[in-house]
Length: 454
Ligand code: SF4
Image (cartoon, rainbow, N blue to C red):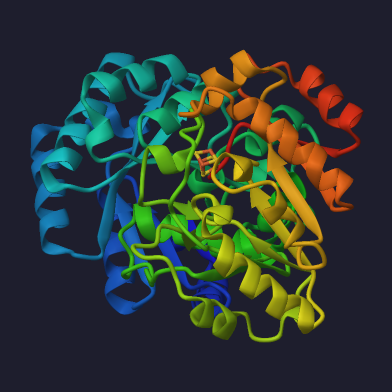
């Protein structure tokens, strides 16, 4: 686990010593927010390999920050490769410890510094959501992006920050009883943008509230995150938030390798191909190749061979399911899918195929029958209740694509497969109508939130 925001110098000597030795904490980002704490942070990072830092001037300090201080900050950053971000900087119109105009000015100067030095920003934003986002936009902060530290804002603000290229860092606040609204925002945050932090020694999470906060308490917050995200284990939260943190703070090489198979919550996913015969408006694959699913890089530069996939699966009976997916459409590799599925079934595994249901647009209907006994479940993305919506949302090249998907679902049910029909909750899609259509055909129904890969 990576604690992306803590103040190690503010912890008691004993707590700091213990948590610096905690093997469950892979990296710690300690934060300096004025001249004194910046010097403390630089000292700590020089003594501990796995500690990195963010340094900058807090909005509370703005009245006292001169151009000379900004110059001093620039030099400190240039001399220390362990400085991985500028901040925390931003606006605090709740406490107003500094004049608002000064806060804005110091904030703008630090955004410019981050852009000059090519470092991300760590943003403190309190009672100033609109103003903070406006300044980030005006100053072109999307060039460097960064972290909305200890985020507790609205869904709209989260979305705007994500669109500006920022990550959303959640603290122990999400564990508090009265934080229901914030937990709703967490549920709707793209998992590729979620970070965790303690902000220790502040904001101690439940159930240890009352004690001084410390980095090792991050696991309490992580546990609540598993409860908020569907189908997500503690291991998944650890991996995905750590990989996100490595990306934003440029830590290591992220262990990037071509992901042929990957495990999430005891299901093994097979990344069979990146090719697809649709262009769904919500598909990340359509927009970026550099994309992760719960901490796994899913873009592959070449399709894996059958042998390669089988070798990676190992013993299929160890997993709840073997899922053919891909950052693309797995049925496009029909023969490979058939061979691998046959091998999995012969070794006691259960097979699911996630598909767009367009098989009948490029293969004759009889082909489906060849997969009887090899595929247990078809999970079909329908995404629309009618052809017109389908054309708008999924952007098929064939004019009769929607009818072909419906035919596929009906045929699969007739052949005795289990079929789960899903739709992504996109603007303009009548989910209720889509659910009814699925159930009338005899399929099961799955509602998918508007955050989807492919
Ligand atoms: S969402 Fe799936 S079906 Fe749609 S374009 Fe992406 S990979 Fe293809």
